[in-house]
Amino acid sequence: MNFNKDKHKWVSTGLTDKGNKRKAEEKLNEILREYEGLEIEKNLNTNTKSKLLFSDYLLNWFLNLKGQIEEITYEGYQHNVNEMVEYFKAKYIYLTGLNPYHIQEYYAHIKKRGISNNTVLHHHVILRKALQNAVKTDLITSNPCDKIDRPQKEQYKAEFYNKKELKELFEVIIGDPLELIIHIAAYYGLRRSEVLGLKWSAIDYENKMIRINHKVVETKQEGLICKNKMKNKSSNRTLPLISHIEQMLLIEKQKQIENKKLCGKSYCTKYQEYVCVNSIGELIRPDYLTQHIRVIQNQFKLKRIRFHDLRHSCASLMLASGVPMKQIQEWLGHSTFQTTADIYAHLDYSSKISSAESISKALDFEEESKPEIVKEVNEEKSLENLQLEIESMQNLLKEKLNEQQRQKRKQSDSEM
Picture 1 (tube, rainbow, N blue to C red):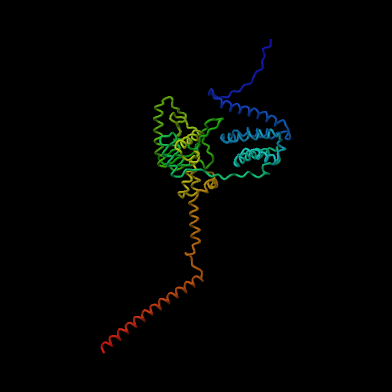
Picture 2 (cartoon, rainbow, N blue to C red):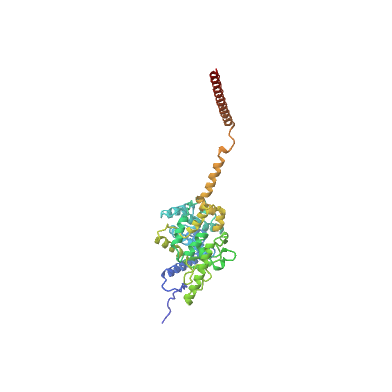
């Protein structure tokens, strides 16, 4: 009797949590994509250029990106790439047969869904990168994306709280789990990842400094990721320790010590070097910040802004107080001055006032010497006035002399 049976291949998901259907499905999709990528890569080595589908090339290029770019960036690309692959796979277009018209058709297709120009631009950036790699590897001779107009970027206008609105927010969050985090974000204009990445070792109480040199992000595949690599070189910065924040940090440190004593072994010690942890020592997750600030705004009927807009609120208040744009760039950790100017130029009212004063002074003709013809007219008017005054004085003197003569005649008549 033959007991041989088909052996089914299996792959471990590596998940330790039971009952997490969402994570299991995400892991399954990732495994399937990687398997499909291996099949495509095998085909890339055996097929000629003319037989390579653009959808196959695109998926293989994307899978090879993993580990070369930031995890959060890779995850951001994923949805767009999946949509591109699905569209071009249905069109059955070969890589060598792809032309600018096909790409323009794709942009028109996704625009029908009502997406913004900025999203179309994101798709364009990904497509161009993928095709530029195909040029470098001699799969195609030129990049079709370079032959079409780059989608126009929509001007972004940041939302923010003014001084009064921030004061209202600070009042309603007293005792809230996010109280310290919101104050730090508003005073320093930190990104969400920078606030959560703040460590106690970054606080220099002696020299009154705070270092922004670590971040925490979260992806669906990897979970929480803690790293020293910042968004850009300028993001790694040292700022003065504001007295108000210093006091809040000292209180928070004492609170964490007390929580650790109360919880005992139940307290999570994995993140004890971090400032932003909850009452049992777990690192506060990025999504919790996004969701909880919405809860606060709804509960107290505050203006709806994103957590990231606290960063914009910080910048707008600095601008309103006359802080130069260059200093704001350094405070926020933007990589270039142009980035700061593009976002906040429309808020820079103080510079507009200064410009108004400058042009007003430049065109103030009263302060300058007047034209010669005006001088002559004024001189003639002054001379006329002087002559009139002299004539008036002369007439007054004549009247007085006549009066004196009349008095004398009266006296002489009476003597007679």
